[in-house]
Length: 280
Image (cartoon, rainbow, N blue to C red; front, side, top):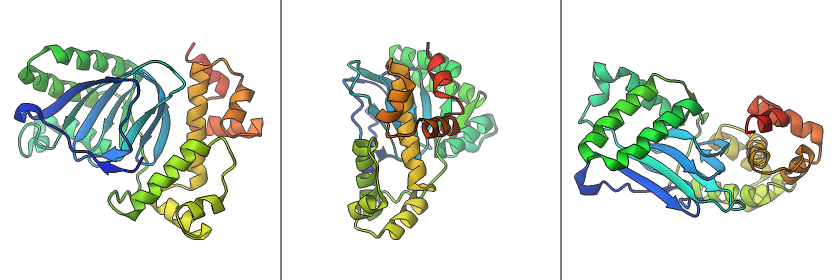
């Protein structure tokens, strides 16, 4: 899950790249590219990482990622459904040099600037936009471009929320290698107790140095990051299993049910029961 550079292909010298992904799972590592990326999740659920933010995702999600913002979707392999998404990737010269500064594109420009931290759209907006994105596969590149600009304008006038709180992701240095190790360690050990000594040994640092490094890089403490990951996994289990809240608490690394409830409500603004009810 190292943040790696991902070159974006532009077929036939087109202004942007449009594609539909459909495989057993989302397979891209934690990566970045200089293009904007608008992604609609048709099928699959799991954990989404954007910058320093971790959330669970599920079908019907629409996210806009800004340039050079590390991100990835990790499918839940316990579920045997496919992973499918439709996406558009484009650079700052989509409509020529300086197009975003024109009066006609003020609202789009605002949205694109907000996406430097990643934005997620309201589910109703996402559903409508997702349908339009899928329909683009049947039109010519020229009409696809026009529809893309129109869709960006519509999205810029609707509700959206920021995903990441920022951070300092130096993606081509030892910082990236350390991040890779930390993220992989959390992915495989979130159910267990994780000590500061384990983490500092992992990246060959002292506990104090590790704490400072993580806070500077992610703009949050490791404890906050771990809780967000665990609660994201809990959200996934609440949606897709019939396990009791108490069982899910233990499965995601919380031995104290009351503490699990407090963390869940602090992060999602809902109780586990309220969250599960929203999906039934």
